[in-house]
Length: 424
Image (tube, rainbow, N blue to C red):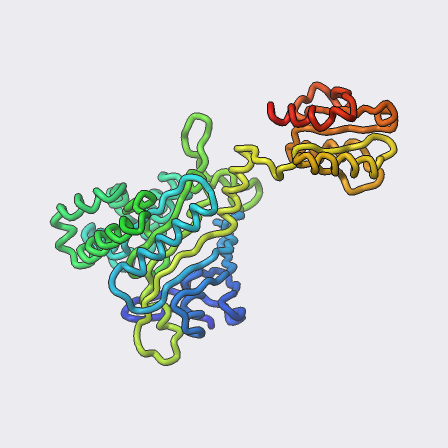
């Protein structure tokens, strides 16, 4: 399905720039297009299969040359609830599930920023922003977690004509709701009042679910896609924002030399999960046109989570495996002797390994130890075995070199290794 121009559904207008689907949609909700969002796929998928809850995958790629980076290609895993339910019950469950998933992935500290589309619309209306400019401004505000404030402000004020004072209203937590309720200009606006009441109920349910400690009510969150109608949210970590220089200042994003592609070292990974309520989108694809089909969902970006986990592994120097001893040989390879030694170590409860080659070279064996951070090596040669000895090398001690290590009696090997492993 190709959408040319605009679509009007449920009184809302969706521009083709934010809702464009490929005619070659893969079955089960998997598709590729120049610009695709998970929500549009969910909407089409939900009309094909009558599901309350479902999981799906999508590959979406932003075709804009100016925004190209490794994080424009996303493989999100998605969870949605489709159907009519009492206010905020399904919303709170989706947010709870998102928190459970991110906690289980062990990515470190994260915060789920939450806002409400109607609160944003009300604030923009109160500030005098024309209705036609609300969505473009929202799209700019939503980039705050990836780009420095100076870049976002420039886009809003110079490119989209927003008063600089409007975006200065950023939030914090549950207490912000009470402050907003005291602002008569806000509660007199129907959109804002409805959004604030929804937020109070949502926070109540999230407290019951035990997820409130991960939540931040943030007025700067403004998911730019046109079809969100209520609660919007995204999860961020320290790596989500732009990187900082040694003096603590944000690095201004740059493009690579002789290219319009962004230098990835100057851009944060962005949100690792995001979603919200979209009540009119599914109806666009329903053949019976019986009315709106309310939906709320969340997508978790696999690439972005994986990138954070890789950084975490590098920083913490987490071992790739649990091998404690690597048995290696010089010259003749001695595969049967290496097998015998490994078997004895296994029987003693020591985690040991050896290279599955009959006559491996010495350097590749050392490389395995370094790459997998194996602390000790048992090195054998024909001469050592004839003398009833083996050589034990501490692989963390670089000054010993490849020929280093202590020669001990073969019969003392197991006890000596256990002693060293206890100290390690």
